[in-house]
Structure formats: C-alpha cells, structure tokens
Length: 180
Length: 168
Image (cartoon, rainbow over all chains, first blue to last red; front, side, top):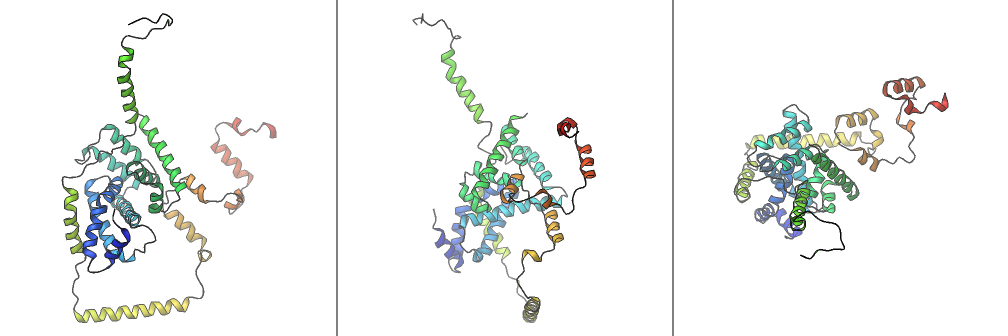
C-alpha cells in the first residue's frame, strides 16, 4: 500500500509530479475502472471515462485538501464522471436515464467484452432496475467489497443509510432473479 | 450389510451414496442465484497499455496555445477590469450574508421540480423529522369536504374499506 500523504505531496510538487502521477495511475487504475464499468457497462465507454477521470484528478490535485482519503476522492470523481457520462448520452439520444440503462443492458449480449451467462445477464438487468443510489451501493458492496465506511466517505451518505439501501437493493435483486 | 432390525424404515437404493452429490448440486444452484462475477472482460493488455494512452491524451489536453503578446496584454487588462467590476459590484450590493430565507419559495419549488434526486421514501424519511409535523403544514389551503369526497369517490374501489358504518 502506498503512503497517501507523501504521494499527495509529490503530486503537488512540480518536479516529482510526473513520477507520482504514474504511481497513482498504476495503483488505482484497475479499481477505478471496475467502479466505472459497473456504471457504464460497456468497455469503450469505461475506457473513455477512466481517462477523463485521471485527467480531472491530474488537473485538480492542487485542490485536494486531504479532508477525505485520496482513494475516496478519486472514487468520487470516477463515480461522478461515469454518472454524468450516462446522463449526457441519454440526453443526446433524447431518452431518460433509465431507458438508456435498459438499452445498455440489452446491448450486453452483443458485447464482445461481456462473457456472462444467462444468470449474470439477468443480474445486470436486475441491477438496472434499481434507483441510482441503490445501484451504486450494490456495485460497491457486492462486487467490489468495499467497506460501508469507505462507501460512506465516497458517496457522502451515513453508514446507516447505506446499510438500508444495500439491504433493499439485495432484496430487489433477489426478487428479480427469482422471477422468470 | 447387517440389517437394523429395530428400525422398520427403508431408504431408496444408493440414497446415502448419492446424497453428497445431490447436496452439492443444490448448494451450487443456490449460490448461483446471485453470481459474484459480472462476466465483464477487458481487451488483452488493456491495463498495461493504459498509462501510455493516458499520457498522450494528457499531453494533448494540457498543450498551451501561445497567444500573441498584444492579445495576451489585452486579455490580462480585460480580465483585471472584469474582476474589478465584479468585485466592486459584489461589495456594493452586498449588505448582509445570504441565507436560505432569502430564496423565494417558488425558486426552491422549481429547483426540486427540475432536479432529479432519486430519493426513495426511506431516504426521505431518514432526514425529515416528522415529530411535530401536521398534515396541514404541507398544504397552502385547507381541504374542503367536497374535495375529500370527490377524491374518495374517484379513488376507492371498495367502500366497505372506509368503515363508514359507524358514522352513518
């Protein structure tokens, strides 16, 4: 595990910046990628959003005040970028966010980078029916196995609220999977 | 095998031999109700080549286009003037700190109407204190009996549900 404070300091210093940014990208690219992919579903979109996320991080590192962990700060940027990407795409196509996400799931079967079986496809369909907050919590808790405290810092929501959201999300997903 | 004469019950042939397999099958189907993997894959070497791709994009993004000196000077002068005007105008009008009470109710309503919050009723219930809240607090005008009757006749299928007997 890298020492965050030293890394942040290096990122803010001109002559250590490039090297520190490289370490940052290497350390977090995979985790941020999966966070983004869980929201945008498609690999090419996830790749775009991941690049934009790191560009945003690079440009705004001076504004990072250290009141949250670097990890939560970056996760927050990645999540917001992915969500606004979805909203923009939906707006461009003149459909609602929910319709756009249903479309994403129905495109999964033709996606070369989706090798899920029927049940995994159905799981994605189930997740697509969840409200935004529950969807985020479900992805972060169930697939990425983040701790409630970490999710709480990323989404700026109380741990109690998150537990309730997760509980409801799991119930809805299970219910969806049980129906044919 | 010696028969257990005290026990009159029998099991189907090979029941205990096949029990383990049957149990394992059941366990695995139960687990697969909610799979832990998402089935997403990434192109080969995607993460290895990501850094190079990002670096070239970052270089493109941060490339500074040189301005002609005169344009540069004019831009600086214009921005100083703009900042001075904004600063003066801001202080001129500013008499006290803004607070939530300075917002018009219609603005607040419009904000809630035009922004999607995606809150469930559980989440709303979590932040709204309902202890001293009366139903009438949420209404601007009182409800006429006639409106209540209209609402009930439009929205009730079974009048028995209303328990009207006692008031008849």
